[in-house]
Structures are given as C-alpha cells and as structure tokens.
Image 1: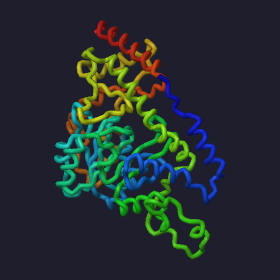
Image 2: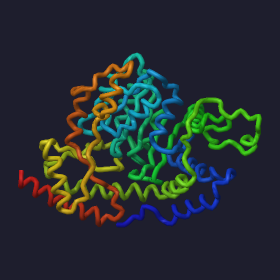
Image 3: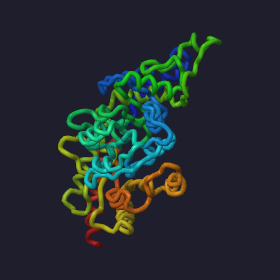
Image 4: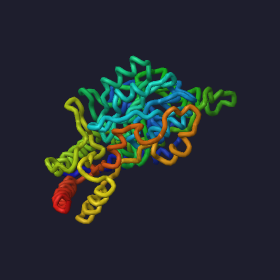
Length: 396
C-alpha cells in the first residue's frame, strides 16, 4: 500500500495562499480554516496556531500564570524542548522518572517530586503513546496543579477511547518535518477554556488587544487608527504563517490516511522483532492506541556501550535505514549540567540516580522509523531487520 505524503490537495491550498498575496484581508483565511478543523477533530473549543511546537508550550505556561521560580514537573526522557520551554518562561523544570515499560512519565514519581512551588505537570505522549492520564490527573487534582500535554510525537492516539489532547488545561501539537502531519514546521495549542484561549492568543500575537481565542488578527481599521492601543500585555510573535496553515489544512483532511500508514508500518516492523528476545517494545496498555511516531525498543539483554552501535552498523551494512537513538536525558545535556544546575531555586542534583528508570532505558533504546509511505519499503526494512537479528545473535 502506498500513501503520498503531500498530494495535489496540499499543493492546491498552498498555491491559493500564495495567490492571496498575503493581503491583510485574506491573510488569516487558512489559519482560520486550520484552527476550525482542529477544533472539530478534537471536539474542543479553541485552537491557536503557532510557529512551532515549542512556542506552544511557552504560551501555555505563560497563559496559566506560571512565572519566574515556579516549578513544572517534566520527564527527562524526551526531546529537551519540553524542558527548554519551561526555562524560556523563567520557570524551573523538575524531573520525574518514567515507567520502565511504557517509557512515559510515572505518576508516583510525579507525586514524589511535588514541592511548595510546583504549579504544573507537563506530560509527553512519547513515541505516539499516551501516559497514564487517570493517575496523573488524580495527582494534579489533589495537588491543584495544571496539566499541559506535550503531544509533539502523537496525533490521533487515544486513551480509554478519548483522543489524546483532550485531558489537559492545554494540549500542544507539533507539525515539524518528522511528525505525523507536517508543513515543515508549525504547532497548535488547544484548550476548552475561553479565558485561557484569549490569554494564549494574545501571548502568541504580540499582546494585541484585538485578538482572542477565536480571533487571530486585528482588523484593518484598528491597524490604521493612529489612536489605537494595540498592546495590552507582553506577547511574542509566535503566529503560524499562512502557507504553513494552508498545507496543514490538507494534511488534517488526510489525517486518518497519514496516521494509519504509520501504524501499519509499525505493525510490520514489530512483527520482525517479535519472539526474538533481543528487543523489548514499548508496552501499549489495552486501553491505549499508539500511533507510532517511531517504534520504540529497549535492548535489555545487551551491553549498551558496545552492542547498540554494533547492531546499528550491522543493520546499515545489510541495507537498513538505521534508527534513532533516545535523546540524552535532558538533565545530562551540557546546558543543564553547566548552567541550569546553578540557577537559583534548583533543588535537584543532576547526577546518576535522579531518575533511575530513565537512566537505565536511555542508552538501551532505539527507535525504528515508521514514515514509510510505501509499505513495500517497510516490509523490505523488516526483512533486513530479521536478517540482522539472526546474524547478531549468532555472532554474540
């Protein structure tokens, strides 16, 4: 089965956006259409387009009133943009451990990390799989904490048959080039709270008075009025471009097709490692649907210092595409070790033992690509993977 990642539909919409010449009266047409389609898809009140999926997180934090010195609990096993957004807001990331089987944020560890300055929890739906929302929401409610969903790697996944993105005070999505839906870059922030939506729109749009959760642009008459008070609050220029929005309108219309192809490719690749005993896949609970940004595997039986590289090199020599490594844990990155650890108010020591499960998993993990738009290529890669596993086990 073949799926075309970008069809004539996306090209048509992008051409229409360009033909509008970014005229002020038409320059939000596709942004409005995109936001409306996201609201309909998630059955949610407000969607606010952003330039990327990190700006969305910064906007969410600021809109919730989380400020300088406030703490936000985050996982260390993810792309560091999650923690960087907290730092950009002047707040302090506090790292909670992950579940050793699902690789997602562990609710018990979250609760153990709560302190007097903790204001929010930022979950990550890692590799396309939701965290344990029942337990995490229970912790948040009991301790009166906000919940922000970072769903950069997750689109149309479900938790207890409810779409991931409908659990938090805010939910963030990314449309960067590797994601399920993409326009090269872009992000979306969604919420059901009209007050938060208004704050988020203003923060992402230079603090303009004339924008709101449903209104992304100030009017021409306001722009041209010399007495108009434009800026009522501090804001950043985080707005999505019209061309990005146009492409994404087409991608959202094709979301089932694009997401479904990733799932089918993942099933083929998982079949290649099943029963080999060499890899342990990310566990998907029965009440969850994983949309597989990648297929995440842990190499429990191998020496991560040597075997991770040996297997990759053998896989590539056989014609394999290679695979992704897990990011360094955020608190192991030079920025955090050399600078963040010295900031006033940091109460965690960035050293071994801070998050034992994450520290165990990180060097042992690999992620197989799922963005195969021709499933014959996925089957070819699965065959190469099976061959490599047999060779590797024999050599070991």
